[in-house]
Length: 309
Length: 309
Image 1 (spheres, chains in turn green, brown):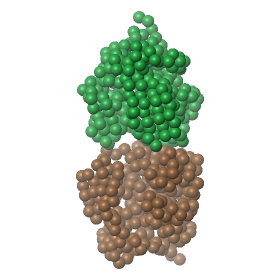
Image 2 (tube, helix red, strand yellow):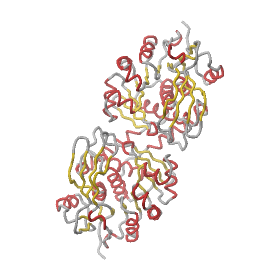
Image 3 (cartoon, chains in turn orange, purple):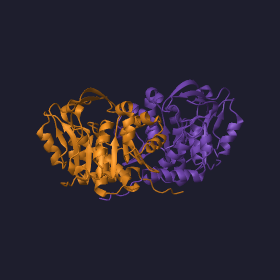
Image 4 (cartoon, chains in turn green, yellow):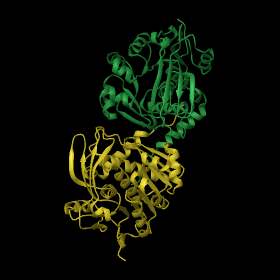
């Protein structure tokens, strides 16, 4: 069997997005969960992406991912069009409307895990059909830490398969509305307890501009969002968060509580870079030293001295 | 001139509230900004309240405040009814509708500051008409640190007077919608910069279940809400926050950045007690040691270790 230095695998989408914000429309830019995740992770480890693209996929975009350090052995090419999404953000960039979703070759996506990846220690199942997530879990048997993302569409439509997948992962990344949909609890503590009972020891509930709360076994960690003055495009924030989180774990090989907290802060930092520009441009502008600067700023942002009473 | 050991003065309302939550209706319970603020502050200092009540005001409620350690020299009694508010919270306790507002004696409230209070070092102008806030500022000339609260009603209707008051205070406590209304900025960093330019060095933007962000000169502090499993009644959370904040400052006599951060955390803790029960019952259940316990829990909730890269 051949070997690979890939230490973090993501199975998700590589896509084209047309993004409308109140000030700008960017057409057919590179997007997709696998793209944002792997480029964010590339600052910390050697990510590989399993996804499918069509024959319209620009070789320059493949080069962009490869130049960022992403292993593309698992990027499948199929006849047809690459997954395309067209969305519009509202005035305050808090919510968005999907105008067009054309699955293209993604409709028949069957993730095939190359032999070199089956012992990859860190695995992220991005937001794809739970049946596909389960199919990946059947193929990657050596993973020591597995993360999973999902969305309302699968919670409503494929709940049984989603429950099966959740039982087999270590961490779930979910937003507050999805966690309410899945558990029936709006209260995050109650929702997290139910989610942990479904399988994952670690539950990360994302709350957009309000940051994230991570429940890890008995630990509760409240991570603020990085306070940016200007957000250009929120697309990919969640995947960049997960990419920073999982990439940092893959680099440090430490999944104890204190390091999971650091990982959530690193994820927050990577999301902050992602939203500062369209497509992967914000992430690409990050540097190891500016990442560390923002991490330290995030630590400072919430630090409280001991009580002097 | 007589003297007083009152070190923190609040000018606001003492009122009766009927509060409807999804599970309970509590009728004509003691409320009002002055009540919540002063009882929260009473754990740290000697607060006094300037407010007006009618001849329907129950002596037992006056005793309750006095027993909590609140100085009532400035509690004015007038013929008529005490300010009455009837509100209903929606299903997730996030928003509320005012069903009845009867100003009663509050309609003609002219805050008269007793002589014993004119040198009180800490002053809080609760959410009353900006003209009244200005009238208080004319009377209390010795205050070294002044906080101010306001609301959309005054921002829309009395903006000039509000601007005059803002120029003379050290800290403003405002929620995120009000800060957008006052500055035109939804982005908290931009809103805070504008608010600081209006006068106060310290701007506390409250975001309900998402906590608060404090901008103090150049410092930014992100304080999470205390993650409760159950909220009985959100009424008074903001005033309890401000009471804990200002009370802690009055106790420690230190308004440097690190201590303002502690004050915001103390405020968060006091708000968490307030919302656990109706009226002042949640605040009254607090103890010095349970306050410190929650403060330490809040510190732990956001702490991040140095990056190990």
